Image: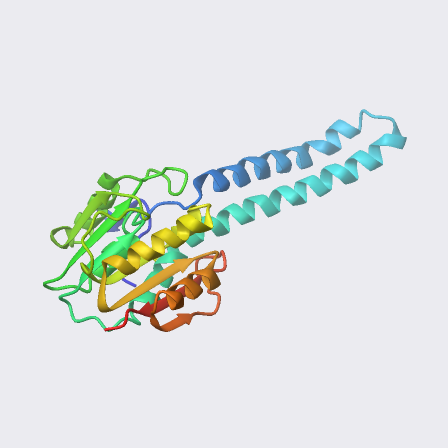
Amino acid sequence: MLPGRGLMGLQMKGGSRDTPLPDYGIDAPDAVRRFLTMGTLAIVVGFAAPSLVAMLPPQYAQTLLGTARSLGWMGYAFVATACVMLWGSRVGKLRLRDKVLATLPWRGDEQVLDVGCGHGLMLIGAAQRLTSGRAVGIDIWRAQDQARNSPQATLRNARLESVAGRIEVRSADARRLPFDAASFDVVLSSWTLHNIAERDGRRRAIEEIMRVLRPGGRVVLIDIRHGAEYAALLRELGCAQVRVGAPSFLFVTPTRVVSAQKPA
């Protein structure tokens, strides 16, 4: 991974000039916010408890003090969880992205599709490995999946990573891909398909992925749930070399990588 890639904010250059860095978003921002809010409140109550219980009768004070202390420790756990989730969004998922993409036999002329591209993590990672090829990302741009999720954020990251000329972004649903059959050499999807609640909907998305994938093309699905289900569907659809990786904790939440090749 290139130093500093994917960290939000500014990087000092030459000690005097700020250079913006790409921002690949905070995943599950509502959950992070809830953990931080609840944790902070619990810690405050834990700290304030000794002063408050001093005004209560002794028979109640000890019990309430113990409860407040437990709440304070719970608060620390909530805040720690939020910090770990932030690390996963800012650092861990970039490391996992680079590890996964390094396993593919890139030529440089591939046509690549990223289903649920978000801020462009996989999309841009793939584009960095292309020369004459092109990478297309589709998303429905839901803010609850990633903070400030938008095509503009993805294009900004592509410009900062110097691959804007090799990518394209569109608004589209994974279950209804707006592409002709056999259009892509590689189809990627990361932390996306589990957001489709219905099993039939996930099946439809994988059928669409296989439809737009060229014979001999490769598919890589990275997700926190349903790995065995994805693998079974890919086998049912005739894929060869279907592999389900061991859980990876680089994104903090246990993540599996499912890969396969469409028969030539």
